[in-house]
Every structure is written in C-alpha cells, then in structure tokens.
Length: 272
Image: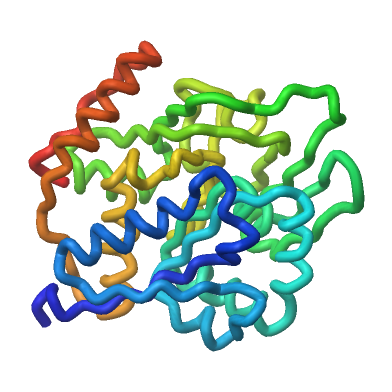
C-alpha cells in the first residue's frame, strides 16, 4: 500500500468541554501533517452524542484541558460502555496525547479545591489533587527531557538526538504518579507537582502531560510519532513517514530555548 492511501481517524475528546488554552491545535497539527503527506483524515468528536463504537473506531485520540465544572460533566458522561471502550483502546496501544484535565480524567481521581472528588477511569496509575485556594497555580513555560524509556528511544531514532519538549503549563492540580512511568524530567518549570521533578506520564502509547501551547506544533516530531504509531497499529506494517521540512518549527524551538536560557542538543532537521 502506498502512503497516499492511508486513512486516519482522529478522536477528539469532548471538544466543546475540554479545549482550554488552545489544545485544539493538537488536533489541527495531526490533521495537517497527515494531509500534507497525502493521507485521508477524519476528525470524529467523542462527546456526549458519541457511542462506544465511535470510540473503538478511532486511530489516535486527542484530549485537552478543562475547568473543574466541565471535567465533572465529562466524567458523568464517560461511563459504562464508553468507559470500557476508552480503556480498551488505550490498553491495546492506540496512541494519544492527553493534556492537563485529560490525564486527570484517565487517572484514579481528581480532587478539586472545592467540591467532591471526581472519579477517573483508573487507566493511568496517578491521582491529582487541587490544594487550598491560596496556593499558587503552576504557570509558565515548561521544558522537559523525555525519559519514558520506549518513547525516548523512538523519538531519538526519528530525530537523531535526545528528545526535549517545550510547552506552557497552567494548572492548579498537583499530580502524583504511582507505578506509571513519567513522561519526562523537568528542565524548566514545575511539572506534575513542583516537587519531584516529574512531568506527565506515559502508558502503552498514551502521552499524558500538563504542556499546553498547544504541545504538538511546538514539538512536531511528537505529532509524527503519533501518526506513525497509529498507522503501524492500524495497517500492521512497518510504516515510516516521508520527510517534511520542519525548519521554521525547529528555529522557533531554538529561539525559545535561548530565551529561557535552556541549553539542549539540537534536533536534526534532516531526520524529521
């Protein structure tokens, strides 16, 4: 099968309720980078009207942030057969990027500053707690070194260098990891809780992170990893994505690292 014939369905989790801080840009990034390579792309909203069959039909999942009230509405809807379908997809390796409120959704629970604990799906071994009101939010630019073993290896193979991600965090909740692997080590910023130096989580092929921005346009090689992983799983073939010119995105990354006074190895533009 030539790469032009590949089809990709992006499942967008609750776009009207969980799209805080421009996280829809992650959907756009995956969509455009697939289309530019000639792939056919469909974006399927996974909202209150979606069914368990809809969830099972997608090839990659994108979830964004939400306020506490919206997150509570989502959790009331994502129950029963829909919850089982989501659990099944992630356990079977469907790739996805889940930002801010979405990892809390996939964890055991989120405890807001006010109100009752919101039970999660328990897919990721983590819990999130919003401290008392007078505790400062975690806000600012965020740089992490990817340390999740398999993802770090895959991204280094794709780019030719160790993977560093840049984003922007804005969260009140503090996340503590259980046995799930951290996505990365904080180089600049606060990360999961501002205490243990971890940021995000990585499980199967699901990337959980507090990085807004949105994340993928700032780190296009991660978008390509999601696309490639989704296509390999769907078509059961050793698919490698055709090269794209990422010069502008990589120059923007370098400018941001310089502004933050963060010194990291440069990504090799020729390889991504």
